[in-house]
Amino acid sequence: LNIPEKEFNRFIGLIEKGYHDLPFHNKVHATDVLHGMNYLVKNPKIKAMCNTVDIMCCYIAAIIHDYDHPGYSNVVIFDYIQDEMAILYNDQRVLENHHLAKAWELLLKPENNFLKNFDKKEFSRIRKLIIELVLATDLSQHNQLLSSFKEKVNRYFIYFIYKQTL
Image (cartoon, rainbow, N blue to C red; front, side, top):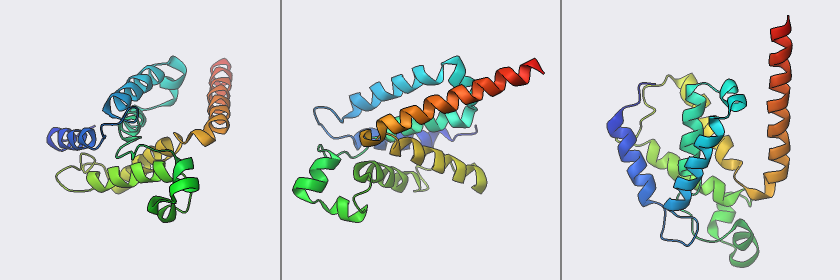
């Protein structure tokens, strides 16, 4: 993938520091999610659908998915404290958008940009996939996203099996 090690290590270190000392949304949780993602992408059905860049995006999304978490939920942000983040993100997946914005802000600094060797088209695809994956961590969307994911996996394998019978 031609990932510059220095920039990658610096970015990961800064992300780790950006996880606050909270009871749940902390760096241990991020590590747990990363391990879960690793287990998921090793599933043969999923692995067959993903290339190396897709898998990298899954890992990065897992690592940043709760970066700079304030320790309260979207519901609390909307209903009780009317936080500035709710205004900034128009009450739409506020925390998920915050985690993404802060992580991309770090990544796009030249000293942290381990994606700098990708061309613009591939960088755009990587960014879009990471955004989609982190936004999918909004639990209010869980059932809908899980159904869609299962349908895509099944559709892919029905097509794959059909293609092999030709």
